[in-house]
Length: 213
Image (cartoon, rainbow, N blue to C red):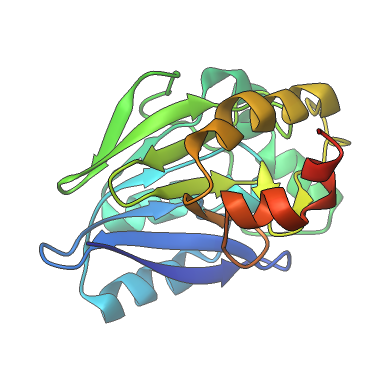
């Protein structure tokens, strides 16, 4: 089965995740926003074999450490959707504006589109394009283990912010209503900035979801 080790990174304490198969120890790193050496140390501690870096979107706290980690682990960067190219091309400029150092612009080896699939060992994930928080945001859905790698679309008790460049509140709400909620109440998810949750829990308790009824 799949296991997930969360590694908080950057001053935003973004939930970088090491997702791996508990038998083969094949793994991916999701959203390495910074502190690449810290992530690599955790990879070594777990004893996993990282096959790729996956990005849900191009904001600096999710992608700012991806190029450094790519060099440390000798793997490819996969995702997000190409609509986030502008964000990935300006990570260093945005980071400097916040007084943050050690972040690099990112160049994915492969862009993703809705309908594609990616895998961690034997575990297949469907790619869904979920714009709103960022124009090229994607999520990764494993229907067998009922798991979503969510990024910053939906949180426990909240939703992704839409006041950053490329954000669009109506797009975000449409992504949640049309792409995420139909996946089913039993789907659990790991997101970028809060504890994990389930679709059912958020439908019952999240005020932003309640406002959609």
